[in-house]
Length: 326
Image 1 (cartoon, rainbow, N blue to C red):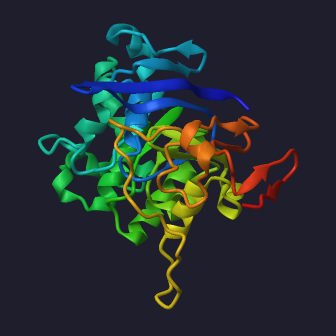
Image 2 (cartoon, one colour):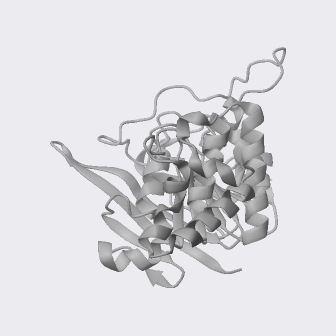
């Protein structure tokens, strides 16, 4: 399978009076053509920071971002321009990411204008894209406030597709939408992926959406990936106690269902002063002395199941997962 995006040991840190704070502390993942990789974790764990860092919207302090066959990590603004078209971003708030003073046709077509396209060709391309995302071509003359939230998100999808990218970073793209519109937008994204082969890095806190759309899953905690692998396998048999707690905390559509006692307790530790050893040991019900002293590395088969835990709930075997006695 063709690799479109490869991230190696990516780090993002910020200086403070007490030293450097690592928002990303060494993240690795690969994204292939036509694939959706879901990224989940609590608020503050670094999900949006990872998306912006991959897009080169914020500076990195270590690691590499390889787009196609080119390392774009250290490219300057001018050298980066030819690679911008291959990777676009879908923002969380469709209202805040659209200019209220510009027609949606102007907002969608602006990249083509910068690329030197003729006005007539831009209008034609914008109209085609609006129809592709389920809006009439005539909507190009209207302004963002004239559309509903779901329609604005469709406009955001059209804008992300205008340069025919290979990769789209989706930062909570449906969190601002109600349930029915959310399903429409997700299905639209899947249809577009099947037609174009575009790859998605899908960042979300909504586990039900990620379960539906993602082929593979990355679970992030305090700036690090603690578990990765095929979505269905992780959902059925999570190996990391943090992953297990996240899934246990997901709401169930049954008001009579008993409350799950395995949900997380306590707050995410501060990245200014992270815990020693395993960063999750302060909240882990299975933590032992080794967890407090030694940071676990991701182990397992890259591209399949990997977990960063000294005592995973299920040991990663060659053929299947086998339960550990804790």
